Length: 343
Ligand SMILES: *Cc1c(COP(=O)(O)O)cnc(C)c1O
Image (cartoon, rainbow, N blue to C red; front, top):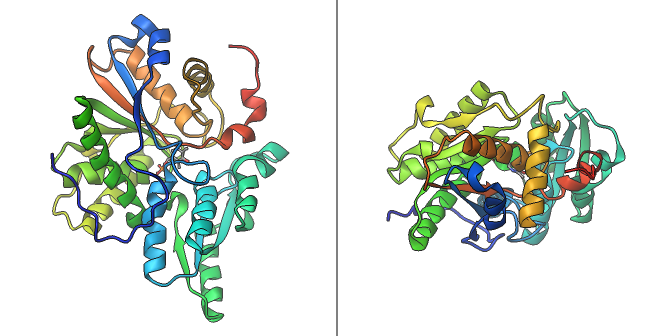
């Protein structure tokens, strides 16, 4: 088995790897014949490491590794008010000994205290970040760059990275994860027909595509369900970020739109807005597995997976792997949505 060698890129350890791969036995027992003979496994990127865990830690290992290597004293990033990426940047910066500043936009139409002050937003403060809140339409990355220039004039050194940590350097985290998954599958005697993730800022999917392509494998093995951008824009973003990551890795191969396996049908009315499918998925996995999906990302992606499995998309006897990407604090920001006592 080819493995990807990314050892030349500086990296800080924020989560123990490999993260576990587990079968969803309770869910599969519950679904029975509706599974159409498919086995569902999850990769637990939600439980390992610091800050309550999540996929952004894999990106932050390389982002803050690069920041430290260039002598930065401050990490600056952007996101929505309930950004998991912002919360994990705050936690990882604390551990790396960097100051952290977050530029958060009110891009989801909610003003209630669960959304504005609980969940991730509460943890940003607990982890000691300096938070700047901006209107939904503000250019937060421009504000972050302006702040970095201000700090530079004071003799400081800020490292700025985009929403979701999805720069080519951040995407290395999931290129590496692609290699990790293949090694684990081989050791477990499994072949996955699909590796499935939620797609917000496109870096997780792009990293997986880059990793698979760099190892000479078919990038359509990775599939994402877009929860932020509409389908065509999300596909273009994955394509661009995957190719930028391949360039950074030094691979010769480039991918084309046909290599990007992406489904935009489970996003619902918009980013951060609940859907029936999300609610069903979060409750089903909680009540058959004791595991938590999140209301913004993995809940909608898992709804997509359930739809595909029930529709018979995968041949009987095949195994699929769903990335549990974290987002647990989001549960507390969606109290009124999730609190319904009904099934
Ligand atoms: C950010 C995030 C994703 C999506 O990852 P991207 O790399 O931004 O596409 C999925 N799940 C959770 C819980 C996230 O926080």
